[in-house]
Image (cartoon, rainbow, N blue to C red; front, top):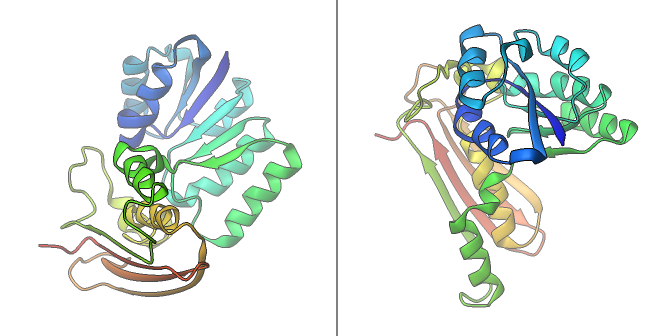
Length: 242
């Protein structure tokens, strides 16, 4: 049985990570929950059947005490790198929420530590496993739509908080979020586009701007990807739609 700890008890843990782990039965034991907000830890503990002795407001204390095999990191983007590095060095495998980090330097450091420690490090590209995405990939593989040479993707909403029940204003802060809709919901669109096109990016052109929202990061972004096989992706994302 894997002993799993969760760092961050916000909305994505409540809606996704927690229920999935709890549903894995005897394969997984949720051995620790950590969040700065005590009420969120208590709520998730109640929902997931975790005893209060495994509640933490200090994630480093959890890593030091619980002997974890695996850690899910579900925190604001700027915390991913230090938390992942610490978890890897504590001997745990790590699953990160997207985006992996807010800079390439942070990504490189996490990869280096994972190699040094011999631990697994991965990012939650969960939409690759959605029924819609898998169905589209099956059609592409079968040749039903011919050669994919252009992918168009959009992710537009009025703001960053649509449909969310947990405080999300950190997403609009340059330091915590690391960017706006492009690094946030646009991240999903980008990795799906790479899958559809069948090749990684060779060149990227982007335009970002802040036109509607009074926030620190962009509220609108356009991304053009030239893929290694010659295909092109046009991606629009924003928190500025009416």
